[in-house]
Image 1 (spheres, rainbow, N blue to C red):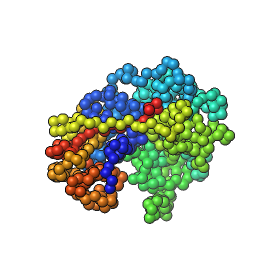
Image 2 (cartoon, helix red, strand yellow):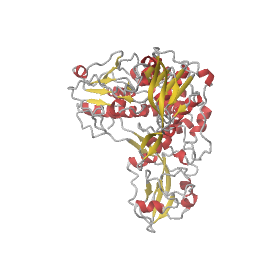
Image 3 (cartoon, rainbow, N blue to C red):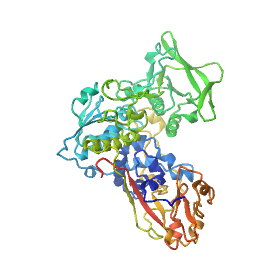
Length: 592
């Protein structure tokens, strides 16, 4: 193998698994280290620069960082990264003086944002400090998009959402709320230099062809519309017996909300095996804790209506069958249909994009699936000054992906307005701290904590089920947060090897607790991976290969299992090993 180029910022970025997995590339170990030092405001601002909504995402993020967490390779549970994000949000001081200053004199460019969800708000946050005039259009009364209309208050209190949304709106965004955009062409006629579409995936899937759907209509609801009705006060009660169809997070929100509105027997029914449900594991756990059974492997056959009243549904029992490629199909067991009684049904079986306000001759091309044709890097549509992001771009994803799209779209809009190529994008900000960190000189807490993942304190079930506005999760206090933060393995503090200083004494090999350091004869990657002390089977993570040593061998370290404990640097008599802190911050609009 060729020697590893550690000057390439992508190399160590990939080693920081949690940050690499985050769509917005939040510097996770850095903010957790700040929390461990009780520097909550600094941790919050580091989050705010990357993911824009730390208090919101500290509660409702889909947490792609946690399955990637290096801690999960040495024990069952990863670091509670999401909950630590909330900790710094809950304990921060006033940040007004830390926010970017907004120029009084604008740069002469006008940008229109359609939809006030996380993607559009991120675009506004990134462009306002650069002097852009921003017009924001949304049909709701307040900003937040689906974060406001679909996420129940027992998961995301309105005060938390409003605080973080208003930080952006108070930068001077020209808000046009209760304004439904009916025509893209009419908006284009206003002379905007660029338009950003962040309207989400606002249409919930229905089951219009299922027998009984029309007859049972008054008691059958599309889940996202029903949740919005609850949030805005149009829905305040529900039937005693409720069936929720679907296995995603919207289904979990529906069933838990139904329990709070008077549903006594609320059940979730899914087509797939429970292990393949799309909902986050912690959301499933909360639904089960609130006495909501999950009935899997049941495919809906019909709504049963008697004397004009919905009385239940019939389902076919199925089993999952997988072909050689792992593709799943559902096969009927041949048993008699199952009848489940109910008074009300909530459909949470998926969401669809909808752009009825974009005229066919407006110049926007769409795929056969109804999604805009976009450059995947720039998010530019077939109409050069119109960009899409969030769920409106590639279909339903999550908040943190919408934020990432907002950052990228803001870069594209800024380049467009400067007359520059949209593909000549700014590089990330990277810093590899050069201070040697010896036995008495650590910049971080390098002892590998044996503490297990901290449990989240919860409000008593009997209390929260009586009031849908009460938040279920109480958050970590500072003491619990401190213990959890110290579980982080600091995978941004990198092991850097200098071959010229190595005497091949093998002190590092003997001391390494994970047997990930090797001195071997060089070869191709496939061969090398099998000849190490511990075979490097995870090909998604790199091997760190040195330049040739005097003996002709090379040092090979498996980045996948390294704990970043620093023992190699402590034991090395020649300082061939160093621990260097690597900070990676994604590019932002206006960055050179």
